[in-house]
Length: 72
Image 1 (tube, rainbow, N blue to C red):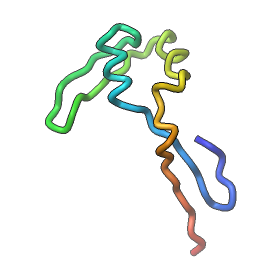
Image 2 (image 1 turned 90 degrees about the vertical axis):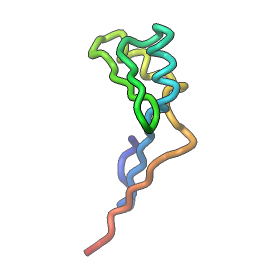
Image 3 (image 1 turned 180 degrees about the vertical axis):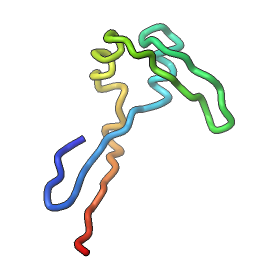
């Protein structure tokens, strides 16, 4: 997340496919369950996951979400 400037806030989301693959390979701890709209990952609450999730491959850097606050 980047701080709002001029009423605009940018956030970047996890790459869920990469996270699911990392869980299945043992790189991250958690579970992956198949769903009708793709795999659903649940990350374990362990400190080992926290440092791994800072690595850039787990994020969709080219797809930020932009939220803009409109004046009322």
